[in-house]
Image (cartoon, rainbow, N blue to C red; front, side, top):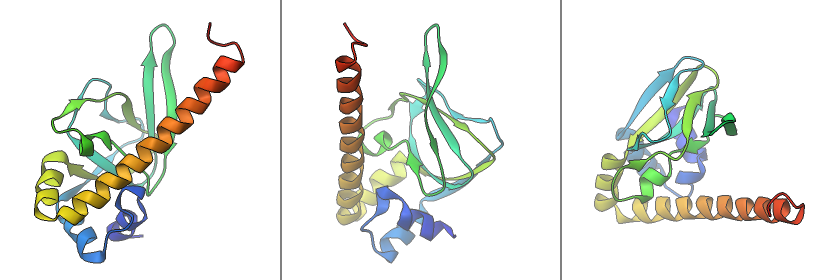
Length: 156
């Protein structure tokens, strides 16, 4: 599968036309990481978003006294770093990203996205709407987990 196909399959870019996907691809860069390589860490500036092209990426947080807690393993077509699309300025990353296997990522810098969004308002609207849908879905899942843990007596 080529880069345009991965972009089209990514939930962030659903609903975009071929010309819009091509515009996104033009502002992106390909990066490769060896298995176990650090892509970014908790607290690093969030200046880009990523689409997994090949391989896998582990997203995790560090829990004091417990160590690394893996949240998800991403596969080709998945994206991460979406909050960089929403925030007006770079913010600190809330989790770490590590190559779970050798991987190839399509990276899009926040500043390039902002410029593209200003040039093509429709791309900006669609992408931000997709990000909000994704974040709402994540919040809904988190709320269900908290409700389950609370009802199971895990929280006092």
